Image 1 (tube, rainbow, N blue to C red):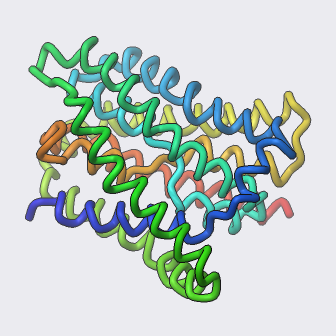
Image 2 (tube, rainbow, N blue to C red; image 1 turned 90 degrees about the horizontal axis):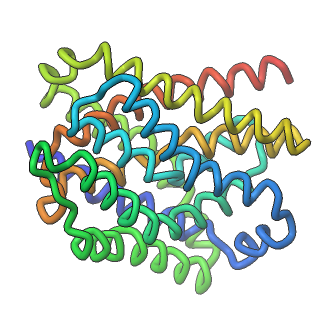
Length: 282
């Protein structure tokens, strides 16, 4: 089974769902409360790729896996982070704002960073990034569904809310289905590399969430803002990373998607444990 036919509709639905909950006031939050919003965006867009490069270098990841870990680090957010923020009793409005802004910013930052990455390590395995194809794919699979969701929300908020209530329940199960199918297809490679990849992905997510907590503490943010930043900086859009890795017009290499698969598994476990800890501590 070609996983691209599973991940494409999942990513499209996730982006459409994001558009369904977006409102103009979500973007105004950056002006009203710039400190937590800017900290979150810097953590997502700047800090996480730096951490991923350092982790990949320290663990001496193979070139394809290095491209993969950088790809997942450059794909922040996703609508699932809003659900996790709600479960953690975080600042859901801030979560939606960060998800929307980081998703739009990656339309620019992802091609730039990944071009540098493939030029740095991709030559060894003959990996090149067709920037034009990446931009066009992101436009079709991300910007267009978000815009469609925005239009539905603007014209009929009640219908948008009903659709969102359905999609938010299937988002995480759909991603887990993708991870399961991918795992069984590439189980030999994953099992052979699980020691280095598992440890490096766990290190990355723990560093990301710890940085979110540390930055929140240093800037004296509220508890709700801190919980949201921990989740937003730690949670990545694995579906986007997998789509780019498997896309026949970009990398067309499912091995590059393996770090995103492992990250998605560990990410959900770590953040669910974090939510449990938040609830336990009240």
